[in-house]
Each structure stands twice: as C-alpha cells, then as structure tokens.
Length: 342
Image 1 (cartoon, rainbow, N blue to C red):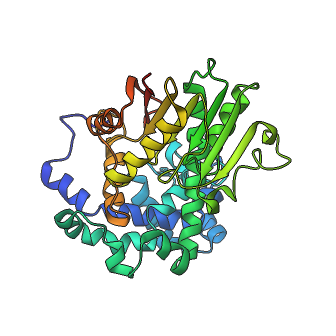
Image 2: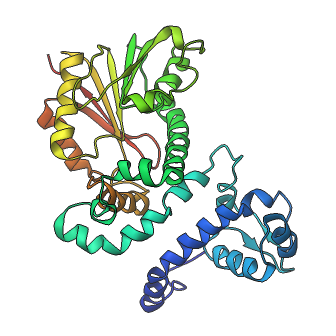
C-alpha cells in the first residue's frame, strides 16, 4: 500500500502523469487484442496468451507489464499473468464490464482532440468542428461509423449498469406514472416498471434513439402495455404528463438548452410533480478524477460541461424547482430530488 513515506517524489509522480497517455493506449491495445477475454481464471503464460490473441510474445509481455503497474493484470513470480479485479472488467462477459467504455474514451478522435485542450480552454468552444468541419455527432455518424458504434455500445453498457442503481435508489411507491426524459433506450424506465408492477411509464428521446429502445418496451415486449415510447426533443417539448420525471445525464448542454428542457418538464408535470435530476458531479464525489476528465472531454467534443453541486443547484432553482435533497446514487452519480411548486 502506498503511504506518505513510500509515495513517489513529486518529480517521479509528474513523470508518470506526463506519460498517462501510454497507460490509456496500453489499455486500449489490451482490449482490442482481447487479452482479458483470453485470460481465464487460471494464470497463463505470455506465449499461450500471444497465441490466443495472435500477437508476438515479447511485445505482449511488455504491454502486460506496463498495465500491471496500474493494477491491470498481475505478473506472477513464474512469469505468468493473472487477472485482477480491474482487468476482469475488460472482459466482454463480465456483468460490470467497462470494455466498451474503455474503447470509447480512447477512440481515434480523442487523440486528435486532446492536444487542442489549451485552445478549448482559451475559447470555451469545442475543437471537433474545427478538426473535422462538422458537429461532433454528425462527424461520428457520417465519417466514423465504427466509432459511432463504439459510442452506442458504451452508452448502452453504462445505461444498463446505472439503471439498476437508479431503480434500487429511487422510492416511487407514491407515484403511479414515471417519464424518462432523454432516457436513451429506456433502461431506467424499464427497471422502474419492473420494480413497480402497477406503474405506467413513458420514454422520450430523439427518433434515432428510441427506434432502438429496450426490447422490453417495444411492441410484444414484457412492459409494452405499460409504457409509451415517444420520439421528440425535450428541448422543444415534453408531451407527456407524469407523477415523476427522471432526467439523467443530459443537462450537459449550453445553459439555454438546459433551461428550455427544465421549463418543458415543469410545464408538462405541473404543480406537485416530482423531478429527479441525476448527474455526474465534478465536486464532492469519490469519482472526481473520472468526472473531471469526462468534463474536459465534453468541452472538447461538444462544448458541454459536467456540473458542480452549486452550478446544478443554481440551474434547478433558477428554473423554478424546489430541491428536497441531494444524495449519491452510487460513487459516480448524484440525484437532485425536486418538486414543481404549487
């Protein structure tokens, strides 16, 4: 365990940080090679692993040794390598897999964008439009379909995993209906409908998103008779009335878009409606290194931002909501439990 006595001196720590890109690149390489999937419950020699992933043994050993410095894989005294709790999360079949998220955060466009972070900080603008001549998601879908697919898989993985936490966290026993606003494929509303068998729900998101809604919500699905799947932009209108509204990880736009979304939800719900806003925060959270990094990535690609507790509170109260409490859902998410005043 690292202690104050054994911690590396500042000059060594800074050198490690400067080479942080090497860790990200090594992690991406291991995922693309399929090392975590090839390594089972028992330790395995580099030669065996190299044969399984079609790589050269020497370079593969160097890759695994570099990753083992960060707790990703473990090198044993006999030269074999074994899984760690972290490296198992790179497996495709792990229920908590971060494989697709690891790929998303190291996609080719990120290596183009990160060196221009100083430019984004100076101007407050995203750099992707200057890099590729078009808005970020337009670029992904038109020019980088493989990266768009990685994004979709990463978001689905993240949504499925966090939906379970949200459903466990929320007590909606006094609500008969819930609407998931900008809810992607609807994993949150599906989890809530499964938790509350008498509840009805709605999912609102863009047409291309809800076209791929969770199979449980589509015609013939187990929850289809209790849910409405609506195509639309919540910044334009929220055409659904419910007792409770969930707004998760979408208030990362410019202030005007955020204000319009909240106004539309308030108008749709009316006095007494419950509005639960769930977001990553860049302060007062165990995951600050992750959330602040995602905050900078949002600046680079879409000019968006993650929130502090204060900035989120200000936007919600400015919109007219009354905040009841703010509590962590898990180490990465906080919930702002609000109501529309009478």
